[in-house]
Image 1: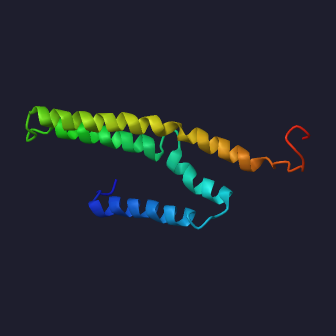
Image 2 (image 1 turned 30 degrees about the horizontal axis):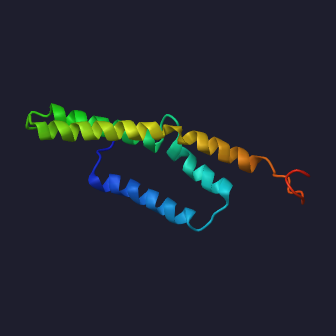
Image 3 (image 1 turned 90 degrees about the vertical axis):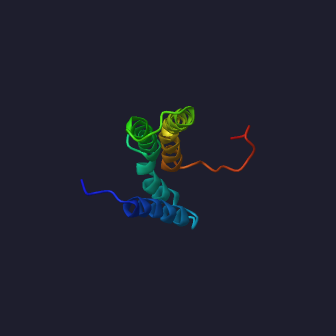
Length: 118
């Protein structure tokens, strides 16, 4: 694995910003879904990866010998772990993609008339 640097992580964040800008240009929904799908994958998407990253950061800070053993540091570590759990809960966003794909996969019948008449 190549060495990670702040620049490589910044480049990933820039790619996300580029995607956001692209989505603001009103692309075809099928294209938009295809681009967003890897980000919300149930197992490897951003919510899961960010949760894992936050847990790893908490562990790194806690286990480092130079980390002070104080209540304040313990609270910071717990905040990282709480944020990780909250991010992991977002893994269910992939279900939204499933529903959106289904929405665009089946043509909607547009028959004039009230709801009862259809």
